[in-house]
Length: 133
Image (tube, rainbow, N blue to C red; front, side, top):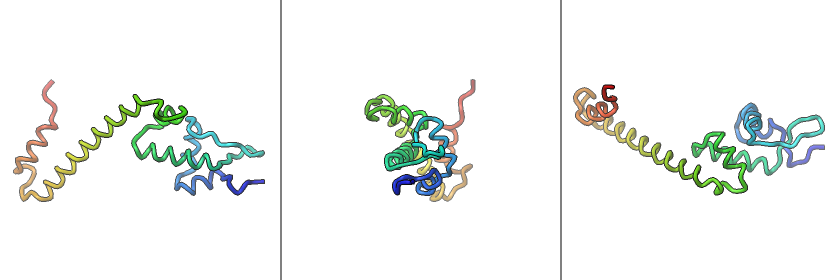
C-alpha cells in the first residue's frame, strides 16, 4: 500500500513542474536514488523532495549536473570548498558580463545616434574584435 508521503515519479514531476524524463536523467547520473515499490515503480519520499529542491537550487546557481553530483555526494557541500570558490569566480565573471551588457543596452536606448555614429558603441564594438593572428 502506498504511504501518503510516497510519491510516484509523475507526482514528483508535477509537484516541481518538471518533465518525468528530467527526474529519470537525474537518477541515471546518480543525483536521485528513489526507493522501489514491489512492482519496481519508483517511490519518492520527503528526503527526495528536499533532494530535488537542492538540485534545482544548484541548477539555478549555475552548477552543472556533474558538479552537483560531487557537491551532493559529500556529507556537506563545504567539503568541496575548491569547487565552490571556483564557482564564485565564474558567477562574478557572469555578473560582470551581464552588467556590461545591461549598460550597453541602456546606453543604446538613451543614445540619439546609430551604432555607426555613437562613439561609445564604436568603442565597445572595437573592443570585441579579436586582433589579427
